[in-house]
Length: 57
Length: 408
Image (cartoon, rainbow over all chains, first blue to last red; front, side, top):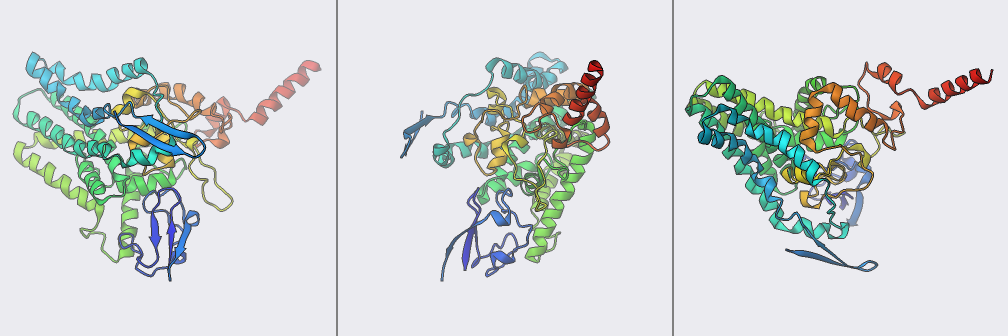
């Protein structure tokens, strides 16, 4: 499971946890998020702007 | 006064002292000016006193913007994280929330218990609306933050003017779509504020509800559940405003209707002037280019900024929407308004004056370069604007033909 970070505001999407508030369940892959996904905190970075942080085993 | 320090490997020690640290108290207490009219009325007995807060917001603040001029303080980027963490600044925003409620209650109790003319009731309702519009500035500052406390406070304060969809719509809608024709909260060149308001208020309402509906659908919840964050804020409004109507009778219906609308109109006014005519280009991917500093109008005037939690440093806000007010920076060569927001609101209310001030500023921006292709133009106004601002190629063609005619 990987984490992906918004390069502007630092929001982290953790695939293991998902994002309950946004309706993304635990285990949901970043790649499976909708294409129109924008950062839930700042809304000014698109999905393709996010950077992969690390891979945990 | 607190000094922030940072050891930079290439620049050595960087220090910064926030000269506005205590001036930010002004943003917190400013809404109290709304009740100054009542105080003056009690002292003088004249109902003209109720106009005092209106004179202050439009007249005095614009005059002080001219007197005190622009703000040269800029926190170094390296020290922004330290300023962000200084909790003093966020306490000021927290304390502003009850002040907005106190102002609404003071005005409502006065209207509900004193016998004054209908015109005075209207003046007090408009005053209340203008200063509850500032409640949306407070909600804006709080609602952009990540903590649950601040987001809940935003919901509470945006309930004062019954605008519960504001933060959600603004953060997820306006910031995503800003400076595009699709954004109902971005005004177009040639669009008067009276045309804009008919697009902005319903457009923002629909977008806010769609965003919340989509989110709740993903979570498997009903849009009419109490998890709906818009409904949470509307519920606070309903309790507060119905209690006022129950306490003071039908006069409150008139007072609150005018108060709420006027607060929305304040937001409309701010939206109108913040991105007038500015346009992000569409890229080959079909997405719009990222919002750039030249996609917002700024006013770097110190006086009105300390009343508005730095809202007028708008380019940096759009570049970093979660950045706290004390950290917002000014940059050279940004699109700039000639005075602070309140003075510009008055100009916006007189469309010929607005166009006269702003159209030439817009066309002179370096990225616009006099070309209407780089401008967000109101449909139906293009031809008239092209007559005034012809394409550069057409200008050169005309000059070429004129030169040919002279040579012949």
